[in-house]
Length: 269
Image 1 (cartoon, rainbow, N blue to C red):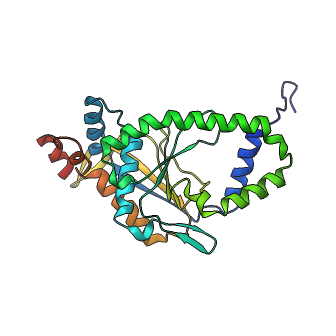
Image 2: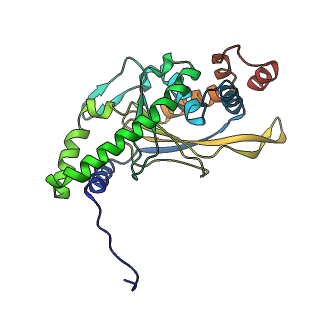
Image 3: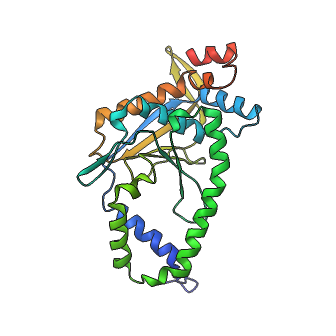
């Protein structure tokens, strides 16, 4: 150690979270795929939402697109634990929400396929602070009472029992979405549900369109998850569906009055 180096012990909240990650990572994701998507239409959607006073975001747009994709591919919407499989009647998606700890709390959104984009974005804006407050309360409880389970092996045993419950796994939805601005590619190798759909920065890139170079708003989607549920063909199907929704003018049609002529042209071209 250097003279100025020092050790700092983890409090019991951090110990529980660290053990949770260890348990999840005992079964690492079976796949990680990447797909580039043009976000021009998504940007138009967000701009229109904000002009109408709604806090539109790329997270809301991505959650809505993922929910529509899963609703059209019901065989992909499932959670598997051991020899049991749960097929929810409605699409439930977990959205990662940044907070004080290194493990972001997950906001579960129910029946997302039934919620038009403005209502979904408003729900996310309203409920994200509640999720942060609840997460801070949980961390405070663990810091106060976490010592009652003092040994790591005991915490991990309890967490394995919890994670083996379909009900517990379903708290996070069948698909988790995480958006991390500030990096080009965002992916998660700690997957507590069927799959994690990630997205980093939305930036201008030079791409080829019709044999010509063009500058477009682009993002890279990543998807990691349980290979026992999704194989390569299923992954390609759901990601292709998400890309089609984001690149088309479909989400513009969910806004009051649809899109302007210029916006509709962008959505079709």
